[in-house]
Image (cartoon, rainbow, N blue to C red; front, side, top):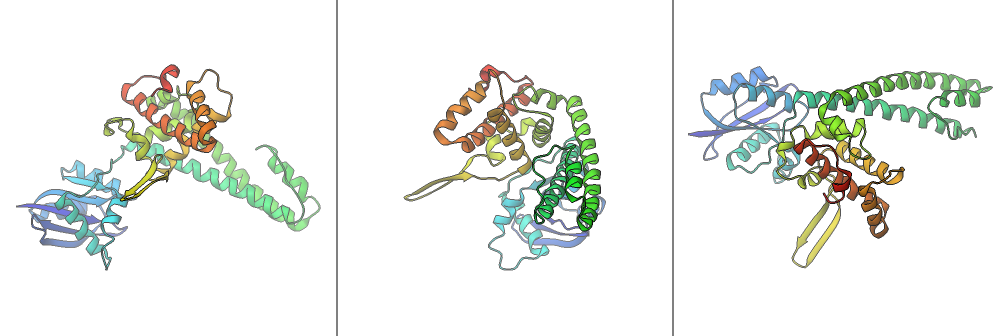
Length: 342
């Protein structure tokens, strides 16, 4: 008889459950959240496991890759889909979640998630670390500006290199503010140094990555946007149509229709936020910076006159997602003449 399993992954121990083709629980246990332990537990069961499901999460891709390599029929499930399926549960426990995932495997009511390659995961780790350092750098700058403003000291517009000098100039003669400024500027200097290291590393990665070099032929797309999009897509073949890429990353409008109600809302914002941000940044650059002979910009500017600049940027971001995916599939550089018609 066929059997189906579900794993509710936790940091130390995961809850595991196996059900048969009729939904009867055959075996369940707590197993260490290690690939070797889970593989051994499933093999020791001696059952014909048709599908094993686990929810996407921080540990899931690591466990999924190891179990897949061991020959187990494992599926990575979309978290949002699983969460909605379990909303009817009056009591939520790890044990019941594992049973629920096993049941989803049995009835086939699940949406598989692509497990990214190791190269893509490493690229995303570098980009995430760069974004973290960048955000903390900005936090320090804004905190210093806010503290000084309380004493009537205005930093004003500065450059990256002149910021520290401007702050020191303002706090001169204020002993307490000098102590605060010295400490925060020391942190700012360290963060700025490390951010520049990440910037250099990202540029090197974009030059050495075939996909990134291809994507950077697109108007408005630089190193960060190309690496973000390329690592998120990972395998272009997993999308049957380029038009679905925009919806996958949450830059298409939500739709609700029931009876006499028919409502089209804002973009769904599902999927990877970093991809949405990167595509929007590229669209912003195209629409706000001087770009000569760009059919994409001409198309978006005409759209902006009808629906406004913000919506035009979102529409351009969605179009960029379609175009860039098609470039990855075909392996061809950006064609400015055909861009707006994509």
